[in-house]
Picture 1 (cartoon, one colour):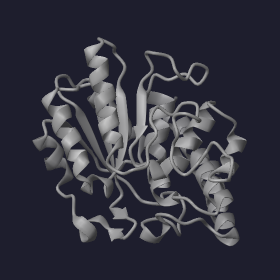
Picture 2 (tube, helix red, strand yellow):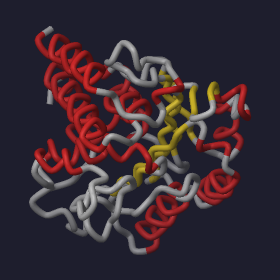
Picture 3 (cartoon, rainbow, N blue to C red):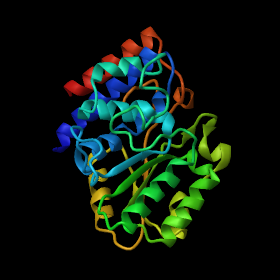
Picture 4 (tube, rainbow, N blue to C red):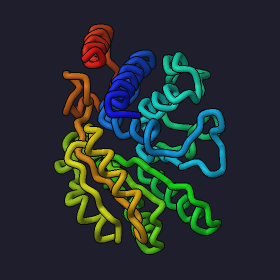
Length: 275
């Protein structure tokens, strides 16, 4: 998929995210929007996956470690063809299979149930180790929040991945600088993120703009060529990217837009799509 098509797809996924959270009257739009571009790149460019055969043995695995950003994952899966796009409007509704965190038992295309922060990367490390033990060539991708990496379990998993030289593991950190209580460096600074992963024997790739497809393409191409060590892609993004009043606002970490805000958000995204 060329850059223009990736941009159009990401814009549609942003519309899906906002619509899903609006329909639920709850959810997490900010981090879902900051990660929309990398999620689009993974599902429509990078990963070996097939919505017609979601459990195929040689598929690449994806673990959404920051599980509350489920609206982004669900929107990508729906646009990829795993389930109807219309179902996104049932997000968090009683009886819906699309709840607030991903559930591998009920949602096609979800490789790991997640939501408890810090645990997803451990599951991803286990998947990557399994591939090595059984001589399988799939790769494992996991997306973490920059607030999430304040969890100690993240670094236990990183230590193990580096020690076992899991070069089929790609850890992505969505460094939008904000978490539920404000700026990450005010709450409990995880900086310097790059140096930390390097200390755990990761190949670290810094992306100055994780909402830019050219930079994402360069980073994932470099990751694909890395041998003998796991990869950490640390990308700077804008929380709430694409919706002006949500951008870089911690208050939009976990709340839904009202009727007027939804209308404004969709108008902005429609104009972006036309552009």
